[in-house]
Image 1: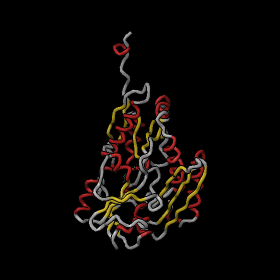
Image 2: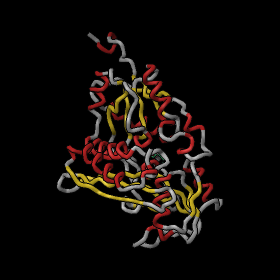
Image 3: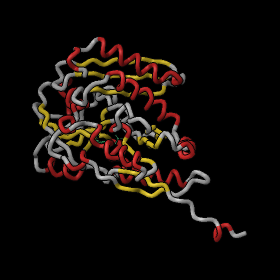
Image 4: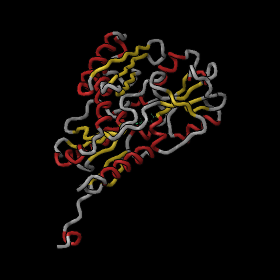
Length: 319
Ligand SMILES: NCc1[nH]cc(CCC(=O)O)c1CC(=O)O
């Protein structure tokens, strides 16, 4: 029997995604990885337009934070308009709506933040990477986490709200609207974008956001066959880091106005070290702590570190 002629083609999976260039690249990467799983149906992208993408003139924290990007996508999943959704995991709330699960995470891109440098900034100094920013420099970022760490290290700096894509930022830098801008290296790498002058900041200079650089895929909890398929795509290393970092974030329960960082790394002995950070947006308070433990206890480690950071931070930083 000729299967190609008689068997119906498998129904393609509808992969929900935001329409931004980064979201589309990530979704296409997912589709390509899925196609390599034996027996998997094809997956086609379905763009869901979300509120967060339409409002560019105000900081995310002000217009409603993380939930803003995912809400419409969760609804599409629960309505059955899509079968799964591909997200930047750092933009996904730690507690997913009932009926939705984090089905798999993909191999992590570089989790570090990077400075896009404009006129007057010279990446030179080895000992102090931030020394490339001139005294009193104006830095564009809409992230309270990046702002807090910057101002804590360099109280002379000034921060201005800055969102938008890389091209917009490059233009603003070249027009002298500010001296430098901060963004996630993972985004640049995924878009295969190089920028004229940049400085990558190590996590001990700038603690990244929980799950930065990790793509996460959500699906309906009831869709057991699909969950089984997606589980085959789960990257164990990224899963451990995501579990530790998101558990830390969940325990801290900050509003999105609270600067919080979380970064897990694997040690040569197999344990993980999780670094967490809580700060005040103006940099006047900053607490950073690390904890080590077994990868199998990633969720517990995150919870313990979150507890400890919260216990020693001003209460008004938390919801
Ligand atoms: N908050 C927006 C966002 N969500 C994910 C990324 C980059 C990719 C990633 O971190 O996985 C970015 C851009 C940025 O923070 O510069």
